[in-house]
Image (spheres, rainbow, N blue to C red):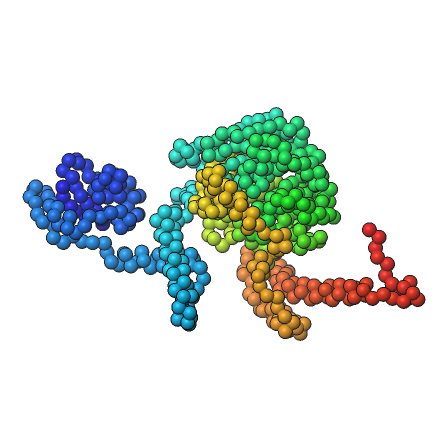
Length: 609
C-alpha cells in the first residue's frame, strides 16, 4: 500500500498493490478506499466527481500516513514525512463563498445583545442567534454541494440552431428515465383534451371533451383512476392536492375525489368555460358563458364573490401566481384583472386590436404574455403596464415554465421562446410539429421537470424541453416523493396558513405597512411640480437612431408624445382617484341627511335595480 497525491482532486491517494488499475478518491469511497488515481481513459469520470472537495470524505490521519510506506517506480520503500495539503487560498475562497450564500438564509439582522441588561433574556437570544447561524450555514452547504447551480439548456455549436433540434435527437442523448417522459397517448374518439398538474408535478389530471376524466401518476406513468361522465367536459383543475379535482361539465361544475366519486355539484357557477384554483387562498374561481365570475371557498363551501364582468362571454382565464389576481381576456381585445373584494376590475388594459385568445403569467408575477386574433403575441411588464416585446404569429394557448420559458401553441405547431440574456428579450428556442391534423388545445409545463404536456384533438402528448423545470424542489412547498403522512401534515399546515380574500391585491408588499397620514401625502401642487419635472426629463431624453424608415420625424415625434403620456399617466390617475373619492364622500353625506318634505322632490332618485 502506498500514498501519493491525486493529480485532479489534490486529495490523498492510497494505491493498493492488489489493484492493477488505480482510481480517484471520490470514486474510491464506494470501494472502501481513501483515494485512488484514475487512468487517462476514465479522466472524464474523475473530473465529474472531483467537484466535491475531499474534506467531505474521511481522510487518513497524519500518523497513519507516516506509518504507511510508499513504493517508487523501482519498488523501493521510503518514508513519506511531509505530504502537501489542500491549498489554503482555495479553502479561504470556499469559506468566503459559503459566507455569501449564508446571507440569504439568515433571519434578518443579528440582535444587539450588548444593549440588553436582563441576563436571562440575553442568554436565550444568544442561543437562538447561534441556532439561526448554524441552520443558515447548513443550508448554504447543502446549496453548494448538493444542489445543481442551474438547469441545463440546449447549446448550439457553430451555425447550428437550437430550434432545429428534433425530439428524436434529444431522446437519443438523454438517459432511459428521461426518454420515458416523451410519449403520445392517442384517443381520437374522446378529444380534444385539457390537462392540469399538481404543484409538485407528480400527478396529472386529463379531461376529454367527450366526457373522459382520468388521473395519472407521472412517476411511473400508471393510471390511478378514469371515469366517463357522458357529457361535455370543458376544463379540469386540481384543488389543494391530488385527492380532489374539479371538472367544468356541460351544465354544472363537479368536484371528484381521487377514486372518481362525485363529492359536490356547484350549481351556482352555471355552465362554466374555465376554472382556476388559488392554492394560497383555497378559492375556486370560474367564469361561465354568461360572463359571470365566481369565487368559492372550498374549505367552508361558501360563495365569496359573484360578479358580472359586463364584457360578454370569454374562455380566457388565468391567475397571477404572485398576487392571486384573476385575469380575463375578452373579445374586444381587453384584459381585465379582478379580486374578490371589488365588483369592478382593478385593471382594464387594451392589449390587442382583436379578441384575446390566450393569456399566461411568469412565476415572478411581473411579466404577462397575451395572444390575440390580430396575429400578435405580446409581452407586458405589469409594473409599468407597458409592452416589452411583440412577436408576429397566432397562439391558441400560452404557458410559462418555472425557469421562464414561454410555450406558444397554434394548430399542430409548438414554439418555445427563451430569455437567453436575462434582459426579458425573448427569442426562439425550440419548435415541435405534431402529426398533421392534430389541433393543440392546451399547453402545460410540468413543475420540476423539463417536460411540456400537450393536450390536443387526438389525445395528449409529452415532449422534452431542456431547461424548463426548476432543478431544486423544496419539500416544504412541493414534494414529488411525499408520503401520505407528509401529505396530511402539509394539508393541515396549508389550512392554518390560508390567506383571506382581502389579501388579494396588485401589490402584496403593501400588506402590513402603515397607511400614510395626510401630512405624509404630497399636495396637489407638489404632484404637479413632480409631473412637470418628469415631463421635462422625458422631453430631454435622446431617442435611439433606427433604420429602415423607423427614424422619420413623424415617428420620433410620436415616440416622444407616447413617452410624455406614459410619464403623466400615474399622476393623472392619482388625481382622478382623489376626485372620485371626494365625490363618493359627498354623495354618502348627502344620502345621510334627510331633506324636508318641500325639498325632497328635488333629491336624486336611486336607480332601480
